[in-house]
Image (cartoon, rainbow, N blue to C red; front, side):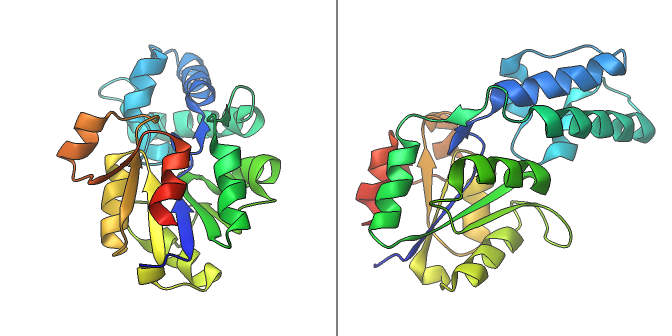
Length: 215
């Protein structure tokens, strides 16, 4: 199979964004006089978009109004602080450049709000990645295939010419729903046993493994 496009998840796959996410979550919770979480706890909450992150972070029994207020506080804080500690995982920059040099079309699809994706794209990926799609209407967030299908459309490729790269069970389901294979990375927010139990069959222990798989 000759792949033409590689579509990446963002958080936990290309970038270690956990600390910034945790800080913004805890800022919002503090403003609501709610108990805060450790980074390891927040790590278990991420992957299904900002709203779900906040739903899992607020105290049990919180009202819908409280969730909405906390989500708004999170978005306000994160929009100003999404790059404070967030950085590329080691080897990612070289991987993207190597893929680009070999003629692959590249995309990012993320459940992160579009403003966060755009901010990080402009700072880190504009020279290598062709398309960057975040959570925004009318596209449904992952694991629905909407964002991946849109990415393939913008790249001008077919499912059989595309492969997806992510770090979570959500990514495995997303790739399955888009009818494309999935590479599960082992440096992200979920471990190999968890990924295997959720259907992962192709693994990358380091970024350079991705190039070996797709070329």
